[in-house]
Image 1 (cartoon, one colour):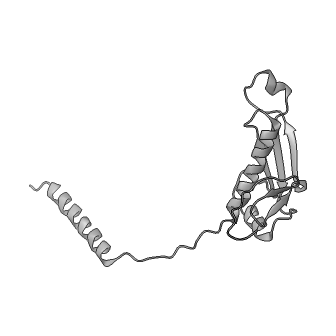
Image 2 (cartoon, one colour; image 1 turned 180 degrees about the vertical axis):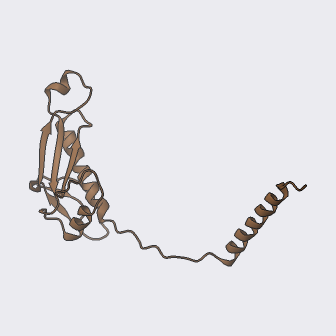
Image 3 (spheres, rainbow, N blue to C red; image 1 turned 30 degrees about the horizontal axis):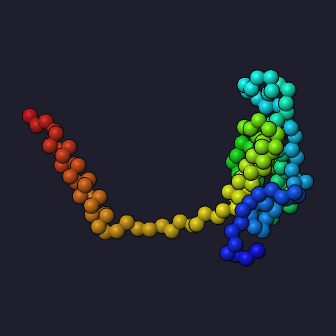
Length: 150
């Protein structure tokens, strides 16, 4: 794949693609079907349509860069043991919830892969400094006029 071709993340038969170069084998994910919570009538009591996805970051085949950044996250979905737990129960079918859980995991991993550009500190211009001081002086004069003199 060339650099100029567009990449569409997704799930193949055996991998969850995070980026054009990073893929996560589905064998490293643990997915269990559970009963969904909340209202839904008889269907919610009978059918295990929600998906509980567990992903152990430390033992995964992800590059170390991703592992370090994922484990450093302050996210309630990350346990103390370094396991990401995602519960998908938005949809009525197990397949849709499975796809939702996988997409949410991929988005989480993709998010930590983005490196923020370093901020370059700048100094205020002379004109902006002058305008700030002038506005402060005007405000002070206005407040001084309010004082009652006896």
